[in-house]
Image 1 (cartoon, rainbow, N blue to C red):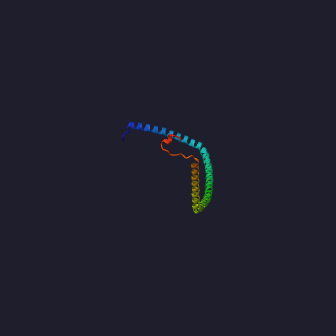
Image 2 (image 1 turned 90 degrees about the vertical axis):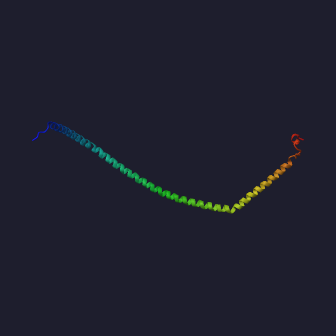
Image 3 (image 1 turned 45 degrees about the vertical axis):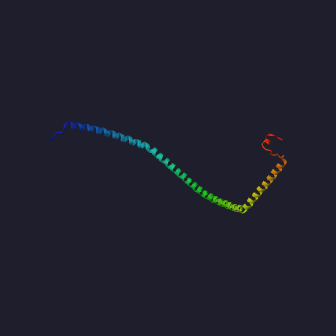
Amino acid sequence: MTELPSWWVYASGVFFIINCVFFLVLSVGAIVLVRMMLEMKPKIETLETSVQGLITKVSAVADKVEDVATTLKETVESIGGRAKGVAGTAELVANTAGRQFERFSPLVVGAMTAIRIFRGISELRADKKRTREEPKRRKRGILSMFLDT
């Protein structure tokens, strides 16, 4: 049989010691981790119940919001129908007023024209009256501007 080289025996011994230390560290780490998990378990359960309470509250709020949205939709539809009715009525009134105006517009235009004619005649009479009351100036030429006789 052949003998093992000495460096191989030393390397195997070092590997064995490192492996034992690593196993001890992992065992201690596992024990610490289990203790931490046992300490966290009540906190996690408390948190879980709190989350369940929040979920029920959020569900209740969501149901209320849904009810409000439904009520709002019905109200908007009702008001929309009324607004359409009012708009239709206003349109009918505007159409009727437009037809009435078309019917009477020649009379209105005629009356306004007559008023303008009467104003023009009265202004013409007033101008004639003013010109009669003012003294008549003679036109003599350029010198009459400088001589006031």
